[in-house]
Amino acid sequence: MIVWFYWKKEKISNKASEKEVQLEIYEPYNKTKLNLSFCQDTSINIYVKAQLSEETKYSYEKLKSLGHNIFDINDLFYQDICTEYTSYGDTDITLSDRINDIYI
Image 1 (cartoon, rainbow, N blue to C red):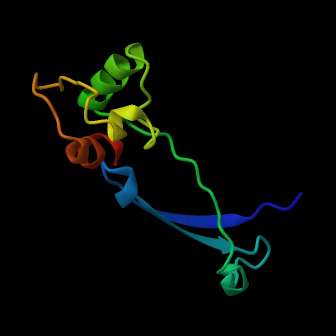
Image 2: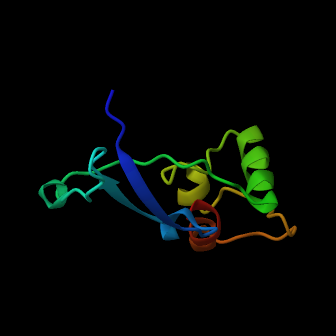
């Protein structure tokens, strides 16, 4: 069995769009860093458990009960100006703020 060694550097942020992960992979026998430049045009999906704020949890549960999905940018919540919503702070929220504050 071959075990690859790796080094991970992660930028933590409350916004998923600002998170960043850097990986280095090392050969298991002599521990030399592998040249991964031939993979530069290859996408790698890294799934990281999200930590949601209390405000996001509140928004998710409330909108789910109304039949909306805050994780879908095409949901009427983000597209239809007539979709009413009272925020965590008991205020209405514009479509652009819904995208900037909740979806992102």
